[in-house]
Amino acid sequence: MNDPKPLLQRDRVQSSPFDDLGEGNFVPSIDRVVNLMPGFVYVFNHQTNSNDYTNRSVGEHLGYSSDEIRGFGPQMLMKVIHPDDLALLATHFGRIVALDGDLSVAIEYRVITKAGALRWLRSVDTVFDRDEDGQVLRHIGCASDITIEKESELRLSELNAKLENRVKSRTHDLEDLNTSLEERISARTLQLQGAVVELEQLTYIATHDLKVPVNNLTRLGLMLQSNTQSLSAEQIEQVGWINDCAEQLGEKIQGLVLVAQIRLGNGNPSVPLGLSGVITAAVDLMQSAMPKDSFPVSIDVPDDMVVQFERSEIDSILAALLDNAVKYAEPERPLDIKIAAGTTSGQIWVSVADNGTGLDSKLDAEKTFGLFQRAHKTPAGSGISLYCARRMLHRRGGTLTFHGYRGEGAEFTILFAKEESRT
Image (cartoon, rainbow, N blue to C red; front, side, top):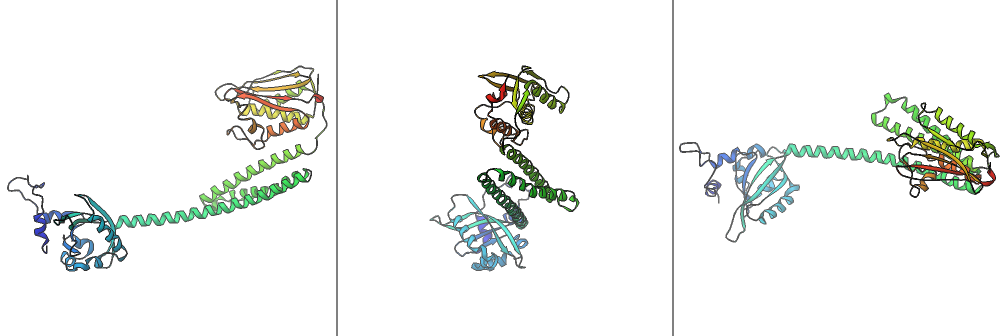
């Protein structure tokens, strides 16, 4: 068909939205309706590989008139379509040929206007007519200008790429920092392993050596924190992270020092201690650091019970157990601590029981006494005091055990060695 207008008129649907306007009312022509549509409409001939029809709106988008588009003939695609998208368009035509019924397919592609500008179009195409064998003769489509949308997508893509590069850069910096920390920790771990071979005294030396870089790191963090006016928000956050890491490292090192001191030698010699007085003093010291009458403690210890032990160590052990009871109090009920003492098979025992959040005797056993391990995630703790308490008792032949249930409380029991016990 050389004249597309009769073609369009021939294929018009006889019933249209304008048919019921009434006699004498104006009925727009198909051409007028097409020219009022957004974008532009075209009919592409698959036999001549050219456009049979384009409405006048094509000039607003491509700069070419309808006559110029038809005049290009089979060269139309080469003239208008961006060279890099010709293969994409060929694939799209294959999809059109494979369409069934009134289905349609869409494509986004680039065109070059008469003025040489690059524009993005989105076309929705469907089969216009077929031959007797069902082969597609022509398809009809509507193309819309999506240049602004695509440019926004490209800008967003560029921004995302820049953001990803920044994230990669920051991640690389963190990986370098982590690698550096891992290398330093690995080096110190090797030193600690060597210290075991060298009679454990080198453990204390290696631990002491760690204080220097951590103290330097802490001072560096404080220096940076005092100069926040010259730092960005991101850098301030990083400085805070450095300070938190330094504080955690400092706490771990202090714990290692305490552990090393416990492991070195046997400590001071044991002396006779009145157990009731020692326990009362430990409770008074704990309560003096808390609000008045903050928690009740009942003490059931014979006045004449005496143990052989080093005073500072038993004070540390009792302080650890009382602190544990207070720290893990159950918020829903008043804290109640009971301390009792007695003898079994010639050995003195002391129990510290509470009604706090509790511990599971089986599931929490390893974490409760593990070095730098904790059975509860909150509140924060170092995971050292109970480990050290148990170590001090083991070193003098005693034991520290517990039993309890989650949500019901826990009871820790000290069992002194026979040679340390007498009544």
